[in-house]
Image (cartoon, rainbow, N blue to C red):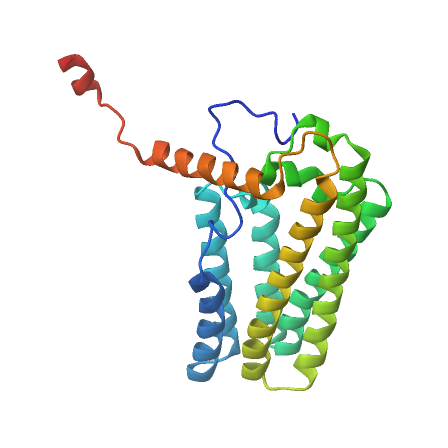
Length: 240
């Protein structure tokens, strides 16, 4: 089944940013630095790992697409934390995360090169692209370029992380990385969206990225209202 060929009653996947909060990004840093200072590195890694697992689980419960990859995400988080505790090395602990980021970037590029573009496959889950859009040559060409930009951006970010770790304290590394990576990632994301909007507008009948995102947002809000609506009880049904 294609990502957009789901049943009408099935809720759409949430849009980016709706499945988490700023607290989810900041708390691992606060926990790690605070517990590392008060106790030791191992307990700091445990706290950051538990928070990351909690965030993954909550996003899965909310219907975030991460739910499909939860086993992989869980294993990766636990493995990283375990390696950091066993080695008792900040360089190893952070190095694993940097390595994962670089691997993701390389994987995106390779997927585009071999014709199995991961972004092209999962983008319809977010935007709701119809079959005519997904099968058009312009779509695949644009998604390949987006995969290259996203992959190279991850590699650049990983390289910056390596340089920053080698030239700052642990506290400086975590703080500067957060305030640099967040605007950098946001810039790349909105740049890719602007590019997709321009390129896909060449496809006959394409409504526009903004219109699709707005429609998906309304679908998601309606799905949330449906989930939260009280269900009639058996006793209530008998009474009527």
